[in-house]
Image (cartoon, rainbow, N blue to C red):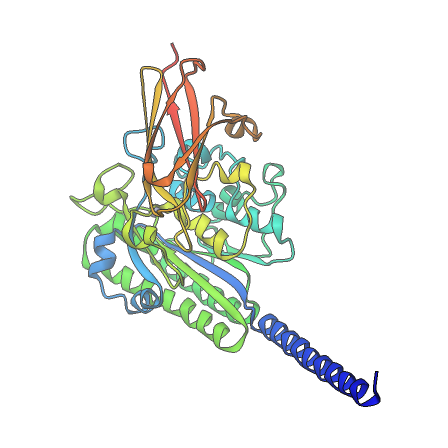
Amino acid sequence: MGIEKQKLIMKETTEKWLKNGILCLTLLCCCLMVKAQEKKKKTVFVIVDGIPADVIEKVKTPYLDQIAQVGGYTRAYMGGEKGTYSETPTISAVGYNSLLTGTWVHKHNVWDNDIEDPNYHYWSIFRFLEEQYPEKKTAIFSTWLDNRTKLIGEALPETGDIRLDYHFDGFELDTVRFPHDEDRKFIQLIDEHVVAEAAGYIRKEAPDLSWVYLEYTDDMGHRYGDSKRMYKAVEGADKQIGQLWDAIQYRQQNYPEEWLIVITTDHGRDAKTGKDHGGQSDRERTIWITTNAAGLNNYFRQDQPGMVDIMPTIARFMDIRIPKAQAMEIDGVPLIGPVSISQANIQYEQEKIQLRWKSLEKQGKVKIWLSATNDFKELGRIDEYLFIGEVPILQEQYTIDVKSMPSSFYKVVLEGPHNLLNKWVVLEKK
Ligand SMILES: [Zn+2]
């Protein structure tokens, strides 16, 4: 090889090396930039007690409107599926627990505000987060001590001894600082106290997952029904939510963080007076959800979301991976990102299970699983499922012949590419 040619090769090699080197450097820079841009995800969910959807739509709520403009607002439902095994009382603690666990009352077992015997086999969103990310910080700001000690079940062996990193609650028991009065002014003061702390704490500490609970609106509903007093309480709650929203915006402007806020109510009120709740009337069952979430899906925009959908939404946003055995038990569907199927319906007739669902995607298949045990509910153990088959999503129905598997109980799971649905058949035992 001549010297000239050798030089040429060397030159070419050097150029190539340089080029590749630059390419590598560029790639490295890109990776570093992506890393730097990756924002920490944080969530606050707020329950404002007992505000019917028609009331929140009628009263001026500028802060909720601001949040909805970033994300969205939708009517939603509480109360499980009316007239079926999952029908759920429109009562406060029952609703909070449906939000926390993503399940209706036939699973979580909190039937009223006494919270006698919650079924902790259905984990709360706090437990899922702590289990996967023990270093992440959790917080609660609330009037009602039971929210932490009974529903989340802090420090109980049944909840794996879960501990929140910060709590600011139980003030309803402090009658010296907040003397109880007939007109429930003390609850209004406690809500103010709780929100001020929550907003300050978010600004300073930015907990990863927080629950803010506000009670005063429900008190005014019970006392005055549909009235100016109630509307005024709703306006007050909106201002309090504004304080939280300001704190979140402050964090987003000053830190590499992405915040999700979800605001909802736990039940509506009776149509006649606006004082009561607990039943299954449309107005009691109709709630609402306001959120700043990005990527709200068609299920949120066009379908009929429920209280139980908030938990899987937070899980998806926070990158919480729910193990399949537990995901198969959740009644909710995420409100952000892709969703394959919704509105499952189950009918049993003459040893046949007729399934129907609504397809939200055109592509893909639905796997169908069947179990005749309920060990998950009773023992916290994985049920044994029979794989029944796989059909195109668009088929929207399937019939299972269960003649060879006689039982008074069946559990069916529909598994789409992006979400699962869970339905029971509960028959009278012969
Ligand atoms: Zn309530």
